Image (cartoon, rainbow, N blue to C red; front, top):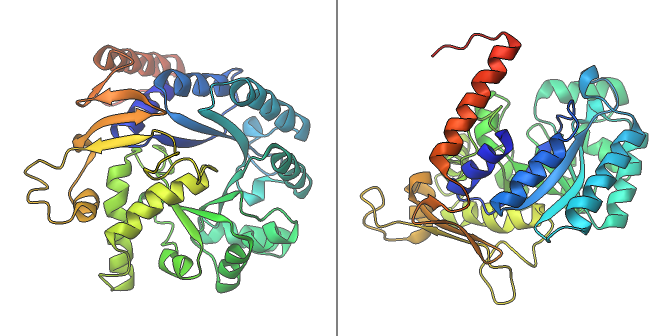
Length: 347
C-alpha cells in the first residue's frame, strides 16, 4: 500500500521513471511488494536494493551473501523475466555502512549485469569526517581508490565535495543526483552543481524521498533547484530553465542507465510522455515554455502521463485504480499500523 501511494504521487508529480533506494528489508517480501506496485502502476522503475554490512543499525545490516543472493533473485524475477520496465541494481547505503570487500564484489556483479550502483555520498560534513577517520579518505577518493567509481555509478547528494573529488567524478564520468529540497529540509548544505556542470559532470535531480523531503514532487523540485543556486551564487543566470529541465529529463535518463532510450522525445526512443497544462491563470501568458514549466507549473498542472505507450493518467485522472478509495484504504492501513505500534498521532 505504501509503495503504491508513492507510485501515484510520482505520477501526479510528473515522473515517468523512478529510482527507489529501498533499504527496509526487515519483512520478507518488502522489495517484491515495491516492484509489484511499480508494475501495477505502469511506471518505469529501478529498484536500487539498499544494503549495509558494517557500522549501521543492526536490524538493517545483512551479510555479503544475503546482499548478493537477494539482489540477484530480485533481478532475475523482475528484470530478466519481467516486462522491460523494471530493473534492479545494488544500492550501497552510505560509505560508512559498507565494507570495501562487499563494495568491490557488488560492483563487479553490476558490471557483469550491465547495471549501475546507487550510493549516497557526502550528504553532510559529519559523514565525510567519519570516512576520513575510518579510512583516511573522503567519499569520492575512497570509491576511486577501491576501483568502483565509474559511469554507471549514481552519487546521490554529493554536497560536501572538494575540488579534487569533483575532478575525480568528471574523470570517471560518474553521475551526480542532486536533491536540493532534501538538502535544504535537513540543512545539509548546497551541492556545487554549477561547478559540476562546468566540469562536464552529468547531474540528475532527485527528491530523496518523503522521509527527508515530505513529498516526491518533481515539479516543486524544478523551481527549487533553480532558485537555490541563484541565491547561493548571487547570480540570477547561473541555472537557466533549460538547464534545470535537462537535469530532470536527460540527466535523469543517464542516472536510470537508459540515456539512449528515454529522457527526450525523439524517433526511436520509448514513448514516455508527460503533458502539462499551461493554460492556467498561474502560467498565463506563456512567453517561454521552459520558464513556465520551471517557474509556474506545479503538480496540479500535470494532466496526462504515458509510459512505454500506456496511458497511466489522463485529464488528471489516474486510470489504473480508484484513487479516492485507495487513499481511504491507505489512511486506514496507516492508522492500524500506529495502533499496533502503540503510537499516538495528533489528528
